[in-house]
Amino acid sequence: YVIYTSGSTGKPKGVMNIHRGICNTLTYTIGHYNITSEDRILQIISLSFDGSVWEIFSSLISGASLVVAKPDGYKDIDYLIDLIVQEQVTYFTCVPSILRVFLQHPKSKDCHCLKRVIVGGEALSYELNQRFFQQLNCELYNAYGPTEVAVKTTIWCCQPNSQISIGTPIANAQIYILDSYLQPVPIGVAGELHIGGMGLARGYLNRLELTQEKFISNPFAQGKLYKTGDLARYLPDGNIEYLGRIDNQVKL
Image 1 (spheres, rainbow, N blue to C red):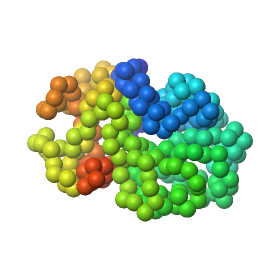
Image 2 (spheres, one colour):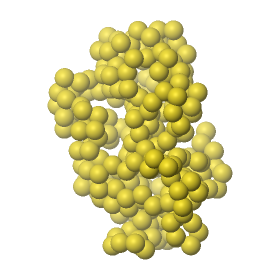
Image 3 (cartoon, one colour):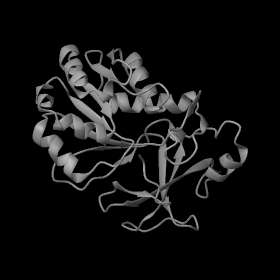
Image 4 (cartoon, rainbow, N blue to C red):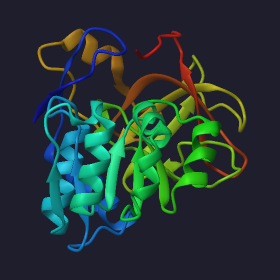
């Protein structure tokens, strides 16, 4: 299937994802988040973004109920909170900037039905992480994964008073943090994050040169690696800290 990138790091590109990649992501995350047929997953992400694929198919595969918000419903926090409470939503996925507005609303404390909130697409701040646990009695996960690697590549179960990370790779995904010579950097040293494994896309639709530039031969094993353009480093505990874009691009 083909889904376009958001365009936050340049002109939108048609990514040729493969079924086994998204199936791997879904199989792992359904187990990792312990999603069952008793759960109710909120669908608020636009169908033009890859996160919607996870919202829709995680419910269909697990047997959970899918609660579909109105178009652009995430822009109306009053509506969103009322929907969560009315439909007893247990899983809610959003970007950190939406979570911030959500937590600023006094009625957010009424969302006792929530079991897990999953954020991604933007950097999660320490301050927002702290505020979440001060206001809500549920789990918070920080997920990372470009469109080119089937939605999610790493996941971290957030904890209060902890350094923010993007966690460790999901099953059948490989993470390499490399220098400009494609050599691994030491723990604690920043490098470009490269991704390999089952979730890797075939490349970009009708963009052969860009595909060859971004999907390079894996110097350590068979297959390809995707050059994310993201700066990261390994923490001493094995988790990965996201440091931003190599080219200093800012998401708006």
